[in-house]
Image (tube, rainbow, N blue to C red; front, side, top):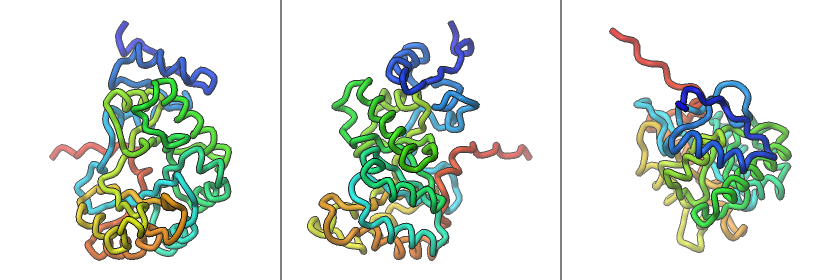
Length: 264
């Protein structure tokens, strides 16, 4: 049997775990089904499979400003207000637990026009789980996000703690997700108790600045108390990026492969 003779697999929720095992055996590491994770139509992120995307492939001065939502929603109102005022698009990676605990917050993100991606259900270290447990984490998060927002999340997955392996990336791809990580994390989530400040968070993003940078921020904090540094840093960060000639773009631009350069 050749790869070209394989037909796309439909991974229903009931058959998700067995489907993952079957697709891994049939397709092998780095190979993926031709259909998206809903099993219908062409796969919009198949061209992103095989690796963890840590930088948008471009030479243009563009940056993606993204957020993780795994704990509380304390800084979300500020974040959404700033993004609206600055006309800046973003993508939020939600855990299933966040969507279950804060459904109104999850809906507010999509109602504001931002994309949501999958960040696992309970944010465990994936390396400590079995293959079936990892698939279940992704499936449960997908269900929770759909229930809270009333819409299907983007076919993007971000690993808890940013810890990836080639084998686990292949597993995620087999479920119909591209793996989107970050170029830099501001680490504002650590809070003032760890010595973080707004200025330090902004500096970390700017020190790593390059075309296609993916910045990771958080809408909450580890302890759920005090100032959400990333929310407070967002206006300064956006101003600083734009003053350096960078444009903030949506990760959804990755859903369409860049056109090939015309032959002179």
